Image (cartoon, rainbow, N blue to C red):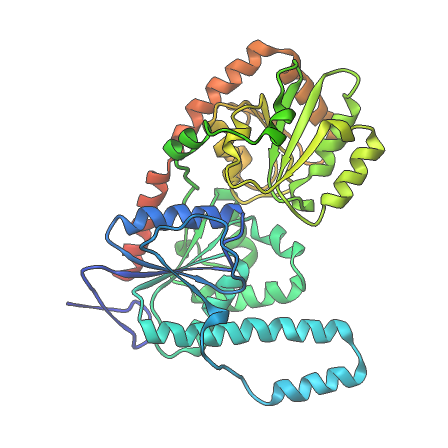
Length: 422
């Protein structure tokens, strides 16, 4: 049985007993988008899909992937792709005028173009039934591959952040905006992680509203609960010694986006009013700056930089309070994970996600981004009012039931089937 492809292209999709899906992402480093893809692929392969994960720009794998899922690294493929000799001429010209910035910019473009060419050839060779792409770089690579290929399967793109804010943090943001406006309309569907992010995609990047669906992230409650009881190392156990201090945990990459600077400043302001310790889980380029700031504020002895943790839940479950101080998000998985562990939560009311998860403060405390005074007051309130903290913990457990991995996977499954049958 055959289905006609829903655009004017001549592609025709043969419906097999076991549809072949390609999940495509930059890499599988320790981030929220990568964790969602790992969890989602694990569920969908149990639903009789054949799944391959393609890594476009890296080769690091931080998450456990189902043994039945094949992982392909584009850079390892024995394929050759070149545009024209124009590349060589332009590089020589740029070298001649010694404009280092423009040379780096041109090389950035050529990497995207080269990987897109390799990916187009790979797709042609394996003939998948649907492609699900995560993150702006990989979305552009996949859509560029679709543009240069005469035959291409349906493509679902997903941005895991508030896109107009995210591209400002990327190199060459103006170029990204131009390419997104050019290529994003080629996708058969866009999955947004929040309503605010969906509005941003439509209003600022001209993606038709009919090509956007919102699917909230879901988490694996059973797995989180199970591994939260695992033992922690003796070295780390010192950070959670039961001495009456309020144990605060923050989880995420140490980047400017996550707003850790403002959390440290808030804690610096309350160091004489409340006994506390902060566990920072994550790595990133801001680690040095944050350690310097902690020393300047006189709180370095109370902050523990624990790096990326394969199992953060065993540490989180032993803390008293979770804080998300981000300047922007898409839909923060870690906030849901903290709530699943019964932690009371404080989160910045940033675009986008926390406000929707906490229902405008009904299920946790929301503070304005960068507002140090509001953040310190919220931490003190949670630190001194144990009864309220317990009530917040109960609300966390109630609210998080709306965000199951099973529900997310079912919505993705329906979206995939919809674009395949179009």
